[in-house]
Amino acid sequence: MKQTTKNILGLGFVVAISSGVAGVTTYSLVAPKKGNTSYEEMFQQNPNVRRASFNASEGGPVDLTFAAENSIHAVVHIKSTINAKTTTVEVQDPFADFFGDFFGNGGGRQQRKVQQPPKVGIGSGVIISKDGYIVTNNHVIDDSDVITVTLNDKREFKARLIGADAATDLALIKIEGNDFPTLPVGNSDDLKVGEWVLAVGNPLNLSSTVTAGIVSAKARNLGMGGGGIESFIQTDAAINQGNSGGALVNTRGELIGINSAIYSPTGSYAGYGFAIPTTIMKKVVADLKEYGTVQRALLGIKGGDNSAELSKEKDLGVIDGVYVDEVTEGGSAADAGLKQKDVIVGINGKEIKSMAELQETITRLTPGTKIKVKIIRDKKEKTIDVTLKNSQGTTKVVKNAGMEILGAAFREVPNDLKEQLKLSYGLEVTGLESGKMKEAGITKGFIILKANGQPVKSTSDLENILKAATQSPEQVLFMTGMYPSGKRANFAVDLSSKE
Image (cartoon, rainbow, N blue to C red):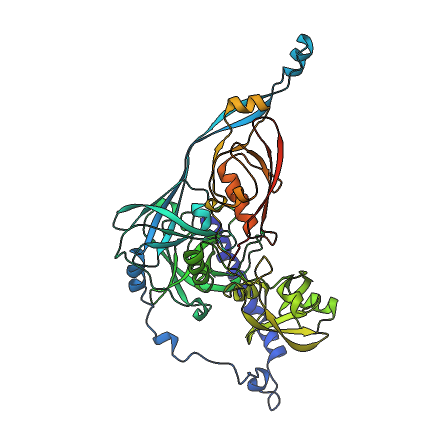
């Protein structure tokens, strides 16, 4: 470290000497001639440029103590536990073929039970209402069997999951009680680049940690893919593992983001962290609380950020906005008349410069909302009225379809029945009441092997497939399997509402 410092200082010394030697020549090249061009003419300023309204040298330091004190009591520590599980796997016996041929009994694969140890993860959460509703990241509590919440005053509670949304990486959980400390929710739209913010959470399992930084950028897309909605607040406040789900707070002590990600080659803080803005969080959390799932409006396009290079290649006539590469058939945009090669530059009077800004704007809206989309088509500006739809192509409310709508009880197929039927997995229907499965003609004893083409080895497998099916336009669950008698059967379970 000392050697590096010396090298830098040495370089600065050389530069300084060199500048002194060449100073006269340089000045003679750039200085305006007497009676000709003035400095004012050389540095012509745009009259619309705003200056700071105060003298920065006389301004006092920003006081962050109130925001910190206000935040730490409403930010909680979350421990998520996935219980130990025993799973049955098939393995190839390396001697099976040899001894099978020798003794004439064929050989083959063997089934073995594997004990998976419990998994424990940690993160943070923010209490948003005094009756115990807490916002956190979906990845903090995903697949958890037990969620434990510890408050700043060391009180410990078991939490239950209200709802989660993988697309925005947000989840809503609840602890029982009242009069919990809360954090007021601010408007992330009011944030300005350069504004001071605090990151509050439990990084590296250290409770109630506060770090400070500034807003480095807004509507940042990290390009992580996976169908997620990305429009992050970027900050240089230190965010580490365990900060996930914690609070990003402005100097007034208001929640303006949920800390979610770091961009680092090492997995630890390396300069920047990213938070989900409250403009997205408020809509998602409200939907999770009321419906158990997000009422997501979709514009129905595929595309990306426009650029000078793309604009030149496609002769678009504009360098900002979102380039429409594909319009989804039957979607909101297609019905309204948007076309490939259109460039979206505004929504409801708001300027749109990037896909992240477009995603953030649409994510706040609900199916059935009518919006005005400003586009550039053939280098001409045009405004199109669009009615937003959901993923099912309708404007109806989508209800969270829990396992109860199937009206059935299940168990994993016991080993003796698996051996009898030559099965390696399956989920047996052990009881039926009024519900979707009974309506489809399924009876007690049916063993589900696949649902919508995916293997069903446990109730959690079926629950995940069911959740995806309820969000699809088809609204159906195709089940294939067999009965203990060996009879094969197929059923189509209609999940659509009769309302």
